[in-house]
Length: 178
Image 1 (tube, rainbow, N blue to C red):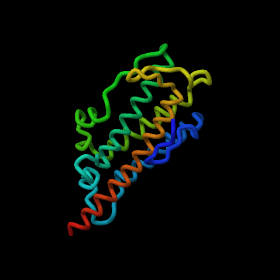
Image 2 (cartoon, one colour):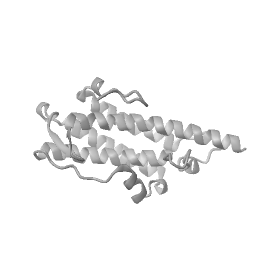
Image 3 (cartoon, one colour):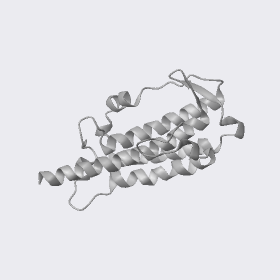
Image 4 (cartoon, helix red, strand yellow):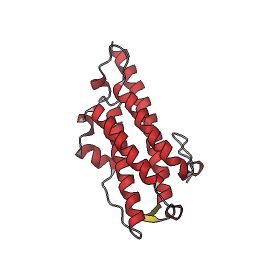
């Protein structure tokens, strides 16, 4: 898989043994933009504001990552327990609308994301050497445990970039309006 054109994440450069530490790092890295704000900022409003109608808010991205980590953990466990399982689950846009991410409490999202990072990291640490190449089927595509570990790290990295860009854009819009 080629590096991500947008964020530069290189799938092949990530050794699966490094995935648990990378996953765990997201707990702290996501909490900061959801809970720490500049003086005179209304953080509750800031994290919910979309920089453009078609772009998720910081809170929506964080809630998405919370749920993605939960899905990857479930899928990896399923792949390790079953032969070539079909990996079920709704798409991210469906979940965002269904679960109304932008109405979530930012601290609760950060807490749940932290719990999901720990659970996923522990699952990855327990993958036996021969388990990395086991596969499941998602949308008629074979996906290995190795690929799921790399995709999880990419999701976490990429959406931190999205959150940073979104918060900068929202802050710039607010400055321009005053």
